[in-house]
Each structure stands twice: as C-alpha cells, then as structure tokens.
Length: 515
Image (cartoon, rainbow, N blue to C red; front, top):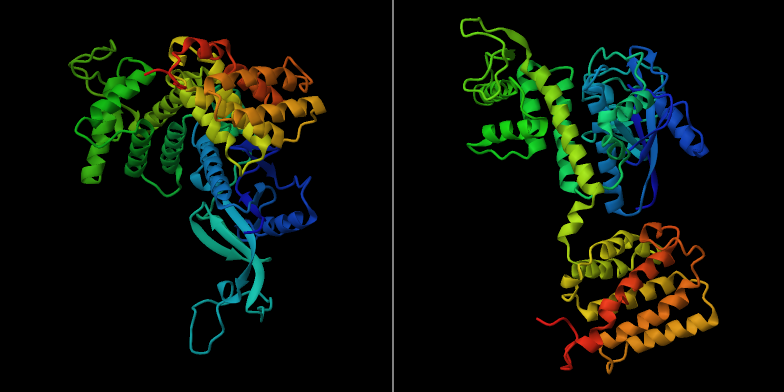
C-alpha cells in the first residue's frame, strides 16, 4: 500500500486556530499553510461540497490532513486516534455551557480514488426506472470510472462524491452555532483548574493504563449519544446508564446496583441525597430495560429510607417534590466521576506506581527484547529503553538483586553496545579497538558470566569520552543523547554489587543466582 492523503473534515464546526487532539492537528479551512498545491486543490474542492441546506454553502469548517502509511497497523492506530478525537470534540460540546448535538461533530473522512460512474449517476437504461431525475444541466461522464473521493461518515456510513457534488447534514435543519470556536472551547476546558489531568489526555500522549483509556472513550461515546437530535427521555437515560456501566466496568450480576452506588459514592464522596438519586436512577434504568419505559424520569427530592446521610430537609408529612430529570443531574455526576478517575490514574502514572511491582530481572528481559527489535532504527531502540533503564536505578533493593542472572546482565550489556555501534558513532581508533576487543571477550566460552561483567566496567569510561554533555547521563535524555542511555545501563550492569559475585559465589561453576 502506497502512502496516501486522508482528508478529515468537520463541516459543522469552526476554529480560529490550530488544535492538537490525540496527536492530530486540526485547522480552520482558511488555514492551508504548509500543504502542497495538490493537497490544497483537493481540500478546496471538498470544502465547496458542504452545504447547510438549499443553496447555503458553509464558509468555514474544521479539517485535518494526515497521511496514510504503508503499514496497516500504523493506519489502524491513526483511524483509532481520529475516532478518539471525534469523541473528545463531541464530549466537549455535550457538556458545560455550550451544548451542541452529536451531529454537529459529524466527521467526514475522504481519500482520492477512481469511482464507478454508476455510483454517482444511475445507468441510463430504457427498461429500468431508478425513480430519480437529474435536475442539473451538467453532462454525465461517459467514462466507466471517474476521478472522485471515497468517503466515510463517522467511521460507519460509506459514500462517494465527485467534484461539484453537494453534501448536506445528516439531519434536517441543523443550525450552526455562531459563538462556537473549537480552539477557544477546548482551551477553556483544558485550562480549568479541575481539568488538569485532561491536558495530556486531549493531546494524546501515550498512557500506561490503556485498559482504562479504552473504557473512558467507550463511556464518553455512550454519553455523547444522549445529544443526538432525534432522541427521547428513555433513550437518553439508557445511554447514560450504559455510559456509567462502561466507565465503571460493571458486570451484569445481581449486585450491579450496589456496585454502581458504591463506586459513585467512593469517587465523589458521600453527601445527602446522592444515595437517593443513585437508587432512583438505577430503578428507572431497570424499568426502561425490562419494560421499555418508566413513570419516573424526574428526581424526587426525598431522603432515602434508612439513609446514613440525612439532608435535614423535608418531613414525613411533606408531599414529595420533583426537581429536574434524573438524566440531567446524571450527566453532571458522570462528568465528575470520569474526571476523578482520569485524575487518579494520572497521579498514579506520574508517580510510576506500577513500577513498584516489577522485578529488575523482568526489566532486563524487557530491555533485551526492545533492543532486539531489528525492524526499528538503533536510535529508536535506544530511546525505547530509556524509561526502563531509569527504573532499574530507581528500584534496586539489593536484597532482591541476587535473583538477577549474570547471564542476563551480560546479554543486555552486549546487546546495548552492539545497538550503539549500529548508530555509527564517531569513536577514536583506540576506543574502537577496545570495544571490538571487549565484544570478542564476551563471546568466549571459557570465561564465566560473573567474570565477563568486568569488561563493562572497562568499556564505560572509553565510551563516555564521546558524550558531549556529561551532565545528561539520565535515560530521559536518551532522545538527544543515545550514549547517555547506554552509559546509564552499563553503570547498572557493572555495579559493584554484581562485580563482587565472582568472589562471593561458591566455586562450583554456578553462573546465576543460587536457588
């Protein structure tokens, strides 16, 4: 598969500046700077196709121009990020002060292709009535295949267009919001103090907890369905219930209601009448699921029986009052729960909490696997191990380091040196000679793995002469200084704790740690 441009258009939204979402830059249709003339030509052709209704052509819209790669797995990742960006845009406008319909975030993806003429104009056949009439004076192409665009709406509906065609909104009489500005609206959302954890999430920085990330997007997708133009209260309530269950990963058991209540109250804390809303909401949800409807879409302002959190309002003889729909308050509760979960996950990730449960022997094995990924450039392989190397030094209780195999240390040291040499560093003749000599010694069968560790202590000072910034000796700098990653790893491999093994270990030919 050759590289190909994919044009992504949100015709019913606009932006005044570029916006980075999930690693993809979205622009205004008036911003074509930096694009090739061919890309500009295609975009102008596509922009001209979008009409609001009748002859009202849309003047400004949001778009992204990205390149399909030769590898399918990369393209799948790109399509996933586009899908995530659309969910985030829709979620932003399904919440807060500026509420738009889901259809406003309709996403059209188009690529150039040859289209069968019959996909645009029905074949002229005297015995077939297609029940349509061509009202335009244009001549129908006589070619069997014509230049056009392969399109997809929201990743689901396939369509084809050619220059001069018109595309209208997916629902009748959709209106454009005058004040809407994607750059400003995303910025205001991200800059809100309580949304601090959203910043990296919006930009698409790689996260450690991909399972939670997938859950968040699935939950937001269901939440967004509550803003479709053609919906009703039962559908909105049910979509919100599915959003909650997806967010909390609730399984369908006889205890699902209790789990739902416990999860919300753990995330948000316990306060008067929250328990009452939770029960009323889930009772309504169950009624819609099993009966198709409920009589109770509104919240009854009453304390739950035997509640631990009395509100101090209402008496036993006071008539029950209704206040707002269960769905409207539920959407606010959902947003708070999602932000709380995202914030907690971000704090745990920033604190590298998961690294507490990994042994350094496992880290060394992972480093070896990453260095052996020959499909990647050596510089990329060195950069990929930087964080793991950093963890080696941060988590080294020497009492457990006795379980690390000397053979693994030697294999890792040998592999990282070979990878570094593949970057073609500028080594002096003396350094080159020493490095090759060490690599030969590491292949010897008559030397124990414990004794081979000494060679890494010898080679490190020679390699360090090539480090232009000695202060940059942390693997976090590996992108700028690949040698820093190498030296930091070798300093672990040749640490005194491992170098003394040849004297401390019983002379019985054992190379690895004692059992």
